[in-house]
Amino acid sequence: MNPTLLIVLLGSWSHVHGCDLLGLNLCTWKFAYNVTDNTSEGVSAIPPKAEALQMCRYKHQLESCFEPKLEGCSTNIVYLSTIAPTEGTLKFMCAGDLEAYISQDSCWSLPEIRNLTAECYLQYISDIQEILTSPDMLLGPKHTLIDNFCSVMGRSRHCMHDAIKQKCSEAPVNIVSELMETVFRKMTSLFSCQYNKNLVSKGRKRMYQLY
Image (cartoon, rainbow, N blue to C red; front, side, top):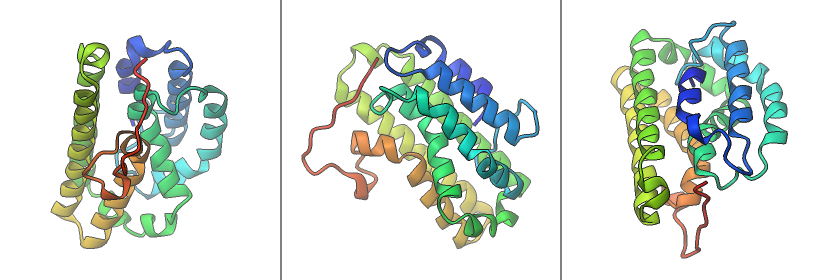
């Protein structure tokens, strides 16, 4: 969750009507600044123990900053693909089983894991940026747009899973699989992405906001 990358990514979408994307991003910037001891590096893609504890420490502060800015965001694609994953990460780690997560710190702290998962995150940001800046975002068929977002999320999930599997045991692999499901839950629910069987729509029409 690199705040500089998010600023660039949101760019021209920062004044989307009904969803304060710029305000939300500034909240995220401050959060990352606090979590990483006032550096500009951003939070790790898969945070090691020290970062995870800091994230949970500042979770309430971030949520309080988010709260007045979230009106109109629940079906906003830009919010769902850039800000909501941060909320999902915090929900998984801090409202879930933090002890189980940090018990696998020997995996999360490996330099190879930090590098591999960072590459997965950067690829996700690049793929999302490509979608958000393409003509299809506003003019293309909706089914194509949905397929593109679902494909990006699927690739990101597999990338994280494979990165952890290369160096770590089954327990952290399973934790990351659950983490990624939570991270993308809002988008997979909205788009009914078929790779997530638990979230496939049962014939119910889904509405989403482009701008």
